[in-house]
Length: 236
Image 1 (cartoon, helix red, strand yellow):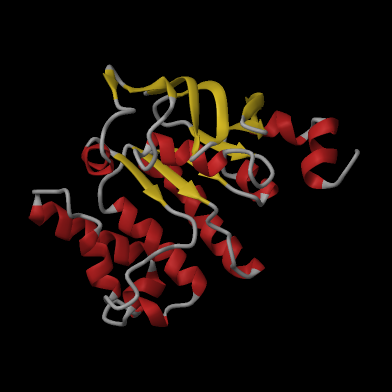
Image 2 (tube, rainbow, N blue to C red):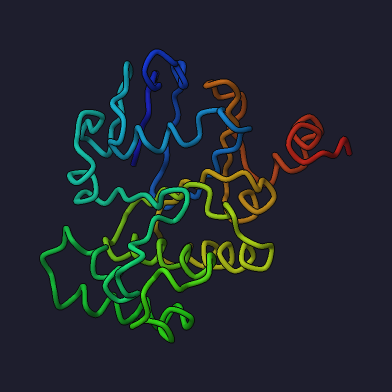
């Protein structure tokens, strides 16, 4: 589905990704694991066209996409939920969801999708006429994910969904992410809460200083002693 080959990327004179390569299959659920500055968010930005790679290629199916604009990628089914939620605070919940379908021309089906998403998120249904700015942090995160789903993504990239949330709200957000498996949407999840990320994915790519140091099943990684000591604070 997606093939990243020898990707180099960064900001200004700073190199963040130093020749990484990996692939994502249809329906796969992948966690990007690494300490701050390891390159997780930079990978997502490169895939979604927010930054231009300095080297290497990104292919989506048979098409090279690393020179495409973000809107063109959304039309192809590649959609990101950015860190910090970034919902439209002055718009209502319903208007935010409608904005997620801006690339779609099937207005009737988009309206049906909106109603299904509101049914799927009872908290959003209850506040569909309220401005997004009055929602709790967890509700805003769910709204951001639901808005992304309005684009009918084939590949959904989610950046730090637990950022700034209480433990209870983190549980709610990750329960919803786990439920996305039913949608058969491929998922790439960049997340500092390692336990949560591994629990909802089948495979994990571990990054350190812009390089991939491990690429293996999430369940197997949880039993790796060196990984547990480095990322979970446990040596056993």
